Length: 527
Image (cartoon, rainbow, N blue to C red):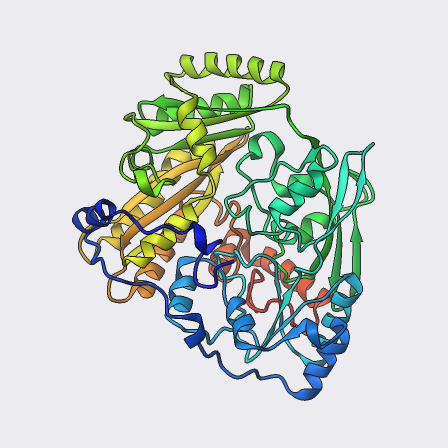
């Protein structure tokens, strides 16, 4: 993972000059060379762990080679991949660097590390792919901490062919998990935008939702079992697919973001690799018309594996392809992308029935081209963000979800909040949105914002983000559909669940982590 941006450095491409001019002319971006400082020139603060503490970590992790305190390792584990995180790191600001990076090799070593950290009151931040965009990797109110990197725990442990489940370790990255399952003829079907770098443990800890969630479900739908290490001991959860034996503690761990424990294995549902995958595009005259069509598919079927709808602005811009930025889909209105998976007969049947519903709802078929283009570039947007940051533009995302009846109000409220706060310094920002995940009762909204960085981009964005979060709750949405809570959303999360709900989370935290070492400041209100 690129330390100062996203993914593989060889895949980042500079923006064409025409696009740079477009940013300057339409958004007032004061284009300039804003590339990051050199990694070799960054000097994080000196580690603040003493000899006894390092010795305890070394023993727990199984050797000195599994405890890193060098500058490069610490910089590479500093913060996550939100735009504010990247702007700080790109400028060489690494005050939030961990004091050590610890790499355990298994469940027992994780338990040992947590016990050592609890004994020495050393905060611990679990680290998978480092793709958090909500402040999930920079603990608050601490004077030192260690990053618990789970990359050594990257195995496919077991497959139950009869039950169609697999046991995966938490450090396994998305593509590696798919490759290992494919050797046995299976797929997990989980492809979030962070897929190339995020890990199985991170998917579970953040309640990740993949681009094919309409067909396969969210990651929390896929999980049937969990093993968790806590400072107080292990949790082994999930004896059966479903249970009436009290509240489901699996759901307590899913989405807990490392605040209650460290996930050391995940048992998931798996599926035979589909014989065929087919993508296509449809045009709708307006976002409201397209949303109504998606609702019909979500409620009455047939439901594709992939079902997305870009609003007018996102359709016009053509977000995922830097070379074609501004060219859009070749059609006015709003672009919907559908993806079908299964046997050839199942794909043909679902496509035909979906086409009838979409035509009845006012849709115009665009053929396979737009869908295939989306599928080809589906993981490119974070690379485009790096290229935009390099020339002085500010790019960030946020997301929410709500019931179908509230989607129009939610969409307008968030757009107005972002445009209103980010227009104060001059040219209004570009605000784009798409429906990324659908359910029978509602959908998610994913917003992308592009503007000038300005003289103080971080306070400028913080004001806009706060306004958008207020608008989300006021309009009846949830503060996060799939990015998580982290530190960025913690205060709004408390408003969403109420004071009693916050007290319940606090009580769970106190029982599982009485020393308060697990990801301090993340998720749990009132820390």
